[in-house]
Image 1 (cartoon, chains in turn green, purple):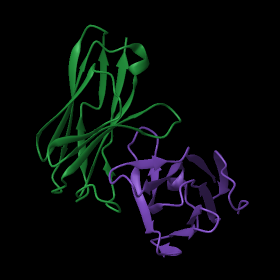
Image 2 (tube, chains in turn orange, green):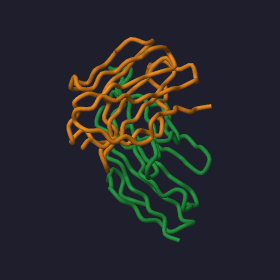
Image 3 (cartoon, each protein chain N blue to C red):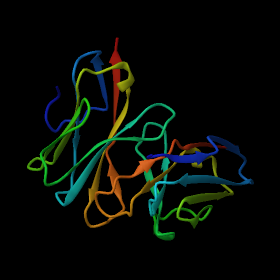
Image 4 (cartoon, chains in turn blue, green):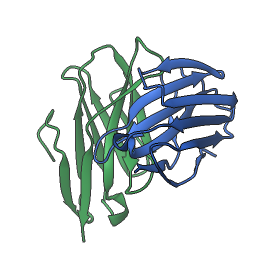
Length: 114
Length: 113
């Protein structure tokens, strides 16, 4: 099973709202990732968690706040977003983050900020 | 096929023909490469990978070729089917950082019936 699940599938929010994106994997992977993808562009890395600790933050604005409650779950808390934050948000996981560990992606959450 | 080393953003292929998608990478220290397929409205799906100590790897209907001399990666799809229509991304792992994948710009493949 190489499945990463994400909820919700679609999300529309106003600039003053607070919402959360959720990601789950049951493959025993110890590295989990958040990516942002704009239309017709490749995914851009936002955060990496390794063994439930934040390992990489790619200078993401503080209106995006990641959380890793346990090894299977990854959340992305959203607050005071801007319309330009509208994008597909992808979660991925890999075995332990070492080179040559393949990242497996979820289906994404399509976020629209009004 | 396409010129070696030339990345094209789009590729139109007749159903049943073979497809060749090219990708150039820039870092000679890269040691792991992956091809992903992304269909409309979905997340990237792993297709095949290759390590830098190999030149060629085959999967089901797909072959990845790695030419380290010219830093070129290609994905060959045999007997292209309508379900192969998607955006294809190559990605490289730059060995100095364990977690990061550097993605190419992507090639949109359209299969003509």
